[in-house]
Length: 84
Image 1 (cartoon, one colour):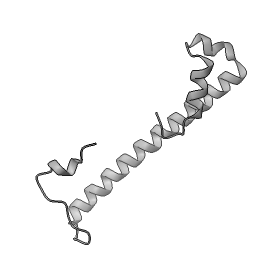
Image 2 (image 1 turned 60 degrees about the vertical axis):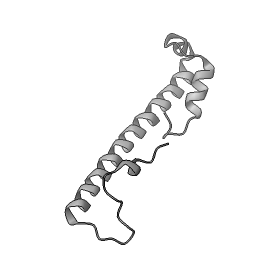
Image 3 (image 1 turned 30 degrees about the vertical axis):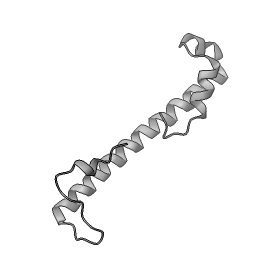
Image 4 (image 1 turned 180 degrees about the vertical axis):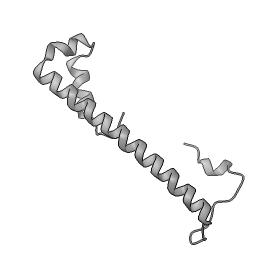
């Protein structure tokens, strides 16, 4: 994996170097955007896997209808919420 900072035209700040208030605000905004994206995406994955488990338990014939095998369903349900 390539380190993105290798190609940055500026040097990274050293630990303890003060960050300008504007940069701090932008960093906080970026962190909140990333956090909300992860939160939303993870909730969608949790919900999808919960619904898939319910379908597999209550109406297993629907699994065939959506084109999945039992093995594919088991593999999907075994994944942690953060994994695609």
